[in-house]
Image 1: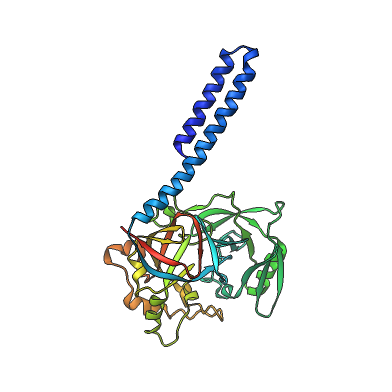
Image 2 (image 1 turned 180 degrees about the vertical axis):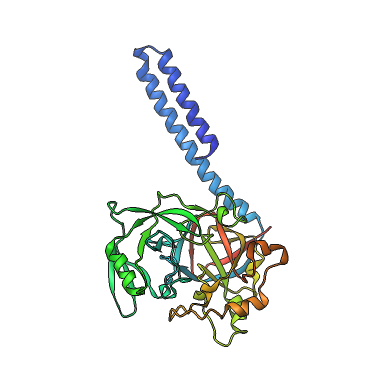
Amino acid sequence: MGAAASSALTGLSLLQLRLRLALPASAQSRAAWLWAAALGLAAAAALGAAAWSTRDRRRRRRQRRLQQVGTVAQLWIYPIKSCKGVPVNEAECTELGLRSGNLRDRFWLVVNEEGNMVTARQEPRLVLISLTCENDSLILSAAYTQDLILPVKVPTANVVRKCRVHGLEIEGRDCGDEAAQWITSFLKTQPYRLVHFEPHMQPRNSKQILDYFRSIDKVSYADASPFLILSEASLADLNSRLEKKVKANNFRPNIVLSGCRVYEEDSWNEILIGDVEMKRIMACGRCILTTVDPDTGIMSRKEPLETLRSYRQCDPSDQKVYGKAPLFGQYYVLEYPGTIKVGDPVYLLDQ
């Protein structure tokens, strides 16, 4: 609700109090009727103001010169951090990332017994585990392993664990002993637990992770940003330098774009996809996780990271932020929510 509408309702509350103090009992029923009528008008005004705000935003958007710079080619949700991605044709863009039905991006996390995050950096075979949703059930699956069916809603009786993701504390509700045993048996290294981030829990502040973000930017279990965008042209350019080609999934983007020039996504400030507005924050510095083959779960520790280091280093002025990590893909945050679909045009908003 806008500030003007909120002020109107506050003013009405004061009016109601004054009427009750000033009027005798015989007149209070009429005052109550007047109060109800005034409240209805104020609520209508508030809704009208919100609708006008939306219309005004669209009008201002139309007045800005829009340049199509690409098309949405792929949408990916990674329900469990570091596990297999789920391709979707349509997704809701929320401030914490993509959502499709009961699946949300990086809302599940594998932790050790101390509550520390476990990713494919430590356990490369995590990339072989998938979490999908059918009807009202979640399904944990991996090759040569019996599926495990879990409830969409974790029982409230399950303990809420204090976890750590890149040094910052965050909560997660334990998904139970069956899920823990399933993951532990598959990885065959040490005991692990699966936790779920619930909407009422406090997300991590992105600015505490990387200073380029704004204080309003939040994430659940993602590294730093709710959205990672990569273009097919940039991937093709990298593959032209490699003996063994890699897939977009090596880099775990949420949105893959077609129709762009090579590394054009590096230069955009704000983009529009459908009704969704996004703002670019910074490049993504790549780590050893990119050397994990998403089909085999084997980490080479070499490519494509070594090739990226040969030509995708940051500007010397940014070395305090990126160090020697090569840059590939861009972190974006949400400016205006909505739904995006494969095939949607991507517009660059006039700066």
